[in-house]
Image (cartoon, rainbow, N blue to C red):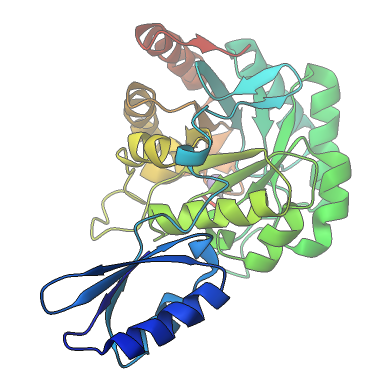
Length: 339
Ligand code: PEP
Ligand code: MN
């Protein structure tokens, strides 16, 4: 962190501030330039309140030179994290395809979709049981019964399961029933929830908030890592922009940018990004070409009658065709797909 002092501040005032900073555990280097002095702070600056420092009447500007996240930062953890779920490796050279319906609707629905996506090559089954819906009158999910139906589909297919958690109260039941805990876009900055899943032993798939910057997103991952849970997978799912033709705008730049900023794996959800089934394939190809570690795809056996997100769901046949293309792109990227 760098503090630029106002021109003409006395040596005595500078020393007063330096003493305060040292009391906070910082090492301070002073550079006296023409007209103003610059203080360089070394130490654990993540906990320093920049706002408070800038309130000092002798301070002109305060700038961070290091990111406020340590545990998620690639600088301090150069090797890419690989999250292991059963035999599935997420990250570094592996392409993982997570597939399944937006919501679990019934035993035959989830089991049929699970069998078909497994046959096409998916290695993780998704299905929402607690649904974050814009309208309180829309289908809210089967809740714990939905998790139990996912467990039945897991027993039939061997696929590990991922489902979205919406409340810290549900951590115990999710710890017991799911393999990966999903935090949805709307809850990316639900800090109480982040703290609680940080204490869980299950990996967390953290979706990007509707209008969150890379730094805000990584800071949310930092909450989970700071709680002791090292297994975080980031998921780019499109962001809000001025374009309304598509449901969201897939931010392809997020993939190489996040890889530069963080060691955590990143997967892409083209279904919620585009919001239309015909957009899923081109966005999925773009994601893998840009270096994503995997995909999350909505698949429904009867999209026309889906209780949620039918318009963006692939049929099992469309998913099979997508997987053939994913395999070709995986080869181009010199990676291998999880089976
Ligand atoms: C979902 O994956 O079902 C979902 C609700 O996604 P998002 O949080 O990205 O909107
Ligand atoms: Mn959905």
